[in-house]
Image 1 (tube, each protein chain N blue to C red):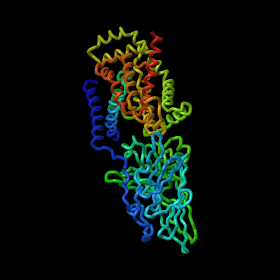
Image 2: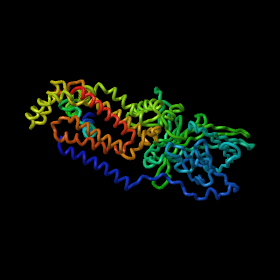
Image 3: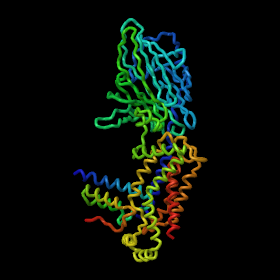
Image 4: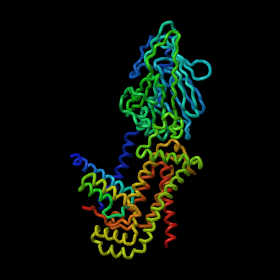
Length: 75
Length: 520
């Protein structure tokens, strides 16, 4: 299937982005696990479209008006 | 996150910096393609010797060109532009454009020179006013070529008249006007010029679209004929554009590509090809070809309405970059200084972000109050960082105080930053645009590195003022080094960009001070 080929590539890209962010910006995430950890876990475990949607929703919530806190990937 | 990651990142940065330093040293970019020293071929060939009828040279072959650049070229001054036209092909062999930091030679290789037509033919300067050149074509046709310059807009006109003075009908094979090879640029761009220059053409909007499309072709390629209609064709680099706007009725197709100008260097070249023509005895045909030859000022090019502004490219987040530049131009009309305009733009952005900043700083203030509780939790879970993080987050949530701003604000800022970077790096308007005192050119790095160092200092103060609590000691250590990393990164950035980031930091710092005194 296509996703079998795409998935590792996406994870690779995500890891690069995480490394870049770590250098360029101070820690910023209001959640545990952080958005990028969350995204990586979602990419590993969920169907691609679901992983995208969940990650997008998580990122949209990660702003100063949301209390943040413990928010693991729902199974 | 562990020590290894920190090491890895630090090492990567060192390798990155070291590698490019080394490569620059080992393989210095080719200097400005040197003008051919004045060999005398062109001058010595006496004009009186009737040349054997030269077969029309196909555009792919440049062997027909016998001229030698500046030797024997006719000098002219038009407005503040100093230019030279050489006899062979009546081409522009030198074009010194008055930039804000001194004259810029835009013709990087005078063979065959810009806007050459029939480069194998020797033209004579016609007496009288204007830049008029005449030649006799071996077919029997007479050619008259006239340049008229408009130094105010840099949109000039090339007028080519082909007439048949004989008593027989004349068939004239397709001929071309060429742009390039290469294109000169300002002093501090020369190093990167060979990566920047391209030959290209502007296509009319595809079906269902409203915007014309710029097609640029890699300078490695030999070249290709483009048979589809086009609006203009030419050569550009970061700051300059030389482009022809031939009428479709006269010019059928364009050739874009490159040719070798020295052993190691290929330079982009574009040609527009006129349609084949048959002239009755006594008949004449006039071609009017508007052409642009000058800098790529975005608003100026947009104002010309010919789609030249498509040659200004801002890479990633192009649209945001164009928008930011428009705002800067508008502000500049009031401030008459791009430095202050950048500062005002930053101020506007900060005001828009203020609700987020306010919220975040309020959390930081509450943090101070729950410090004792936090310390307790930290002691309790000192051995289990993951659990500790979780408990800390829970504590923040309970008090409505999360010291971290969230990923979204950063995600939003990143495109703005990248777009501004590209816009400030590529905008001709900022070239040689001063701010105050020692900052004479916002597009080049600060000559005394004052801006980046001050910025690093302020970031350092800021990080001292609100130390971020982090469970992971390596992570918090890395955060401490942020100002250093940033300072190094910004040392060679364009001063305009550092000014943006510095203003950002200063404003953040001041807001923090003001709010802090209010809450304490």
